[in-house]
Length: 253
Image (tube, rainbow, N blue to C red; front, side, top):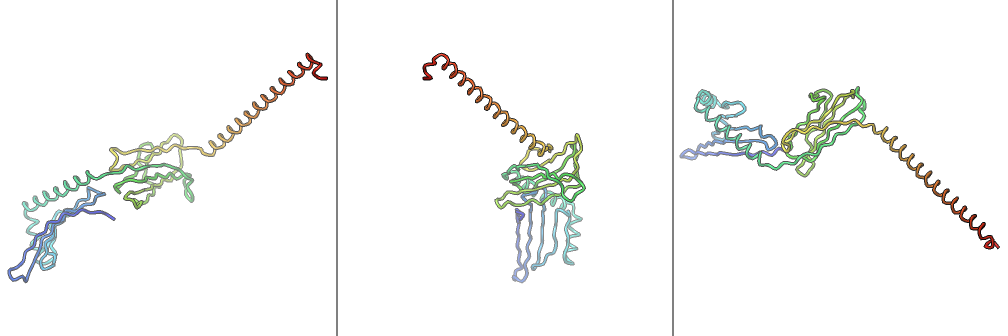
């Protein structure tokens, strides 16, 4: 759910007899996860009917009744009114950036892994997983030798963890080529600059066989040394016993 902050300026006016009423409503609206998405709205109602509305994304007033259309046309042709609307929109932006800048942020934890690409024309799938970050907005870009990759890329939405933190996963299907560098670049409000994580291919099966073979060699060598030491010790003891019997033959009686 998007958390929105709304500043409301409300004015009411009534007829002397209380038979009619109208009100003016001003919104300074933005999203905490996107300080750029600031919208300034002004609305004028009469007897619960919307007459005109100013929307900063449109930059003009829109009329919703016959009288409202005439009024909107007058306002849109007024340079002083337009200049004042720009000033109020800028004030909304200032407030949004001030509050957004004071929010606490949590730096993401990133892992980069590879799996065999199933049912694909490519050999591998790289998975760039980003965990436990805040705020929600995050950008992940795949790079090949420093240049952006746009094809064969799939990504999830920002997924809530249930503790105000989020996770995000981006996948790249590709066929490795000798000498190329594949990287995952992460941009987030908690980072002063984008962080780049390089994929380093590992031949897990070859390493596993090498480790097992080395371990077996070391164990065999250990047993060989132990057997040799035991043999030498036995020979030395026998030689000492034989020497003792030759010197003291009476001990054998």
